[in-house]
Image (cartoon, rainbow, N blue to C red; front, side, top):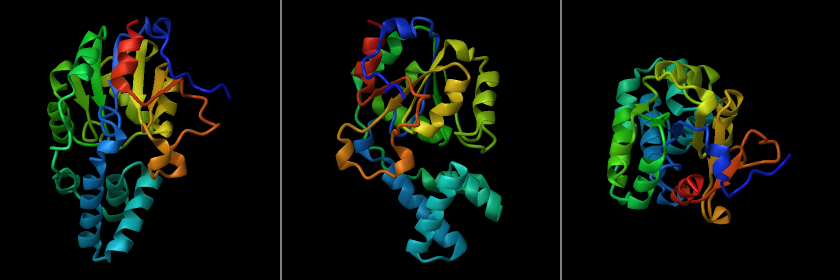
Amino acid sequence: MTKPSTSPLPADFAHVKEWVFDLDNTLYPHHVNLFSQIDKNMSAFVAELLQLEPDEARALQKRYYHEHGTTLQGLMLNHGISPDAFLERAHAIDYSALLPHPELGEAIKALPGRKFIFTNGSVPHAEAAARALGILEHFDDIFDIVAADYVPKPAGATYDKFASLHRVDTRHAAMFEDLPRNLKAPKALGMRTVLLVPRNLDDVLMERWETLSDEDDHIDYVTDDLAGFLTGVLG
């Protein structure tokens, strides 16, 4: 495969009028590790729901996440839970680790066209995180797991629903994500695809499917600096 580029060519993005961003580990960097709090909350929820020991609950949570895209989807399919209580519990976290990022805000604001957050999390979580970063006001809307009828990325139908709901011409769109598998459907829809990776990849514990491989020919660009990349997109 041809390796994805790390330096954006403005010409590659000149046609883009719809900018779509994942939230966790994308709009804020991986090292902030906000997701670790969510992860612990989800494991605790599974342990209490199914009366499991912590290690068993975590193993089951991770299996559902891997097999179904989210722990929530696995719990809904296998145990028929109501999603509201789960989402509220999962996102009961401390956002103080997120600091205002004015450079990112200015870069997003400068992009021509509409900007969206597209997350497997909830709208309240996305709003809280984006507000802490000082970038919430620059987005036109948030498409969350509720809007997706609880069917998470990477399901193709969820991208179709997002595009239909917001009348997004995917041939004039770009998507930014931290998980390679979540960029397959956008690429198939004609979007420009950008993968966000941790700055010090060797210092981050990630599963194999969470990292870029030689099979990921659906990814156009890779970056560890979203603000810098967006600034480069505009030339």
